[in-house]
Length: 190
Image (cartoon, rainbow, N blue to C red):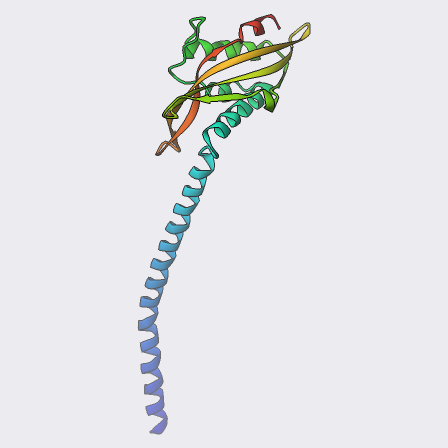
């Protein structure tokens, strides 16, 4: 009879363990979901922060010129178009839509483009309040068309404004955009 007592005791302990397991699995599942959501939120925050401009306003403007230089050399009209403000207007009467079209047409008509903007030629001037400004710079542009390769030195001035943007369609931010450009007219000849 002693054995039957031990058997009943073992069954009772085993029953208690199986009843406790569902509770532990529920807690573990809930903790796993919370941890997954927290890691997902952290990943989204890091991705948004990675897209935001870094540095001071003059450094951000210099980075904008570097993006433009790189996009030109890669003949990437979409990347160049993202740098242009929807409020673009220059002294030649070009609007944002016309400028994007002109850029795409120019890049299509040239097999290769090389742009060199010396860092020491970049002069950034911010308006009081820091929401608008201008940048002047010297650039050497070499372009190879269908039948010839030409180079030209140009001095450009671009008007700039800090404009609202969206990251991943949800998160707001601000980036510098080009609102006008002067000095590019000579590029038509190369």
